[in-house]
Image (cartoon, rainbow, N blue to C red; front, side, top):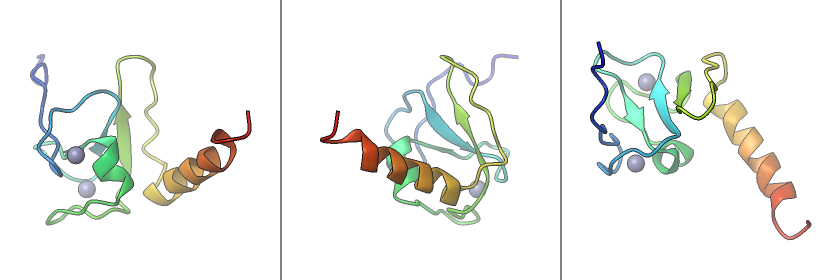
Length: 88
Ligand SMILES: [Zn+2]
Ligand SMILES: [Zn+2]
């Protein structure tokens, strides 16, 4: 069934989630959802830890790799930041 059709709020900041957002692969049900901002700062809540595996939720393209850890994602973000600004 289409049980997630309503925009769910972020667990960190309670704002509506805009894709892509993060769904913890280890917490839930109910699903533990975070916006990218809260995920990036390593938001933790009760059982949820920032090193949990997760899925990226987006309807634009299938990026579902629960084998990635937050650390790997942070490394990727840092690499993007290093190359992404100032030097086009
Ligand atoms: Zn948030
Ligand atoms: Zn979790």
